[in-house]
Amino acid sequence: MNVNITFRHMEHTPALDQVIRDKSEKFVKWFGPSADIRWTCWKDGVDHCSEVSVHAGHQEYFAKAHSDDLYKTFDMIVQKIQNQMK
Image (cartoon, rainbow, N blue to C red; front, top):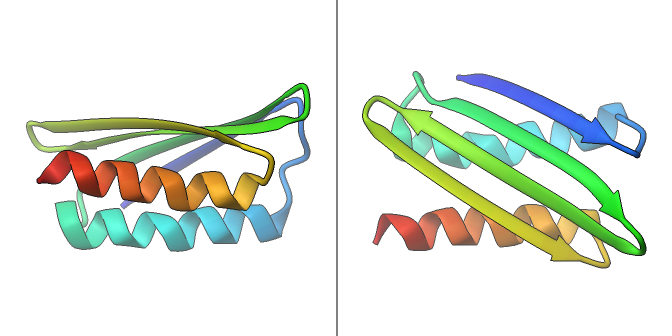
């Protein structure tokens, strides 16, 4: 699993990093250990935003979420990726 995490206009803390890596484990279960996962998180006014791009073999998935809580966006993204797989 290759996880790349980028933060714009906000602090990159070890706690956020760990939560994102934990959420990324779900993608590894679904797509295998060769998954390339790229997270980007930023703040837009009062909203927190996240997006993820997952590449595994010939599969590519993308999801984006906005919320008043950054941690909530992580759950929303995981759900969106799961919905794309159906």
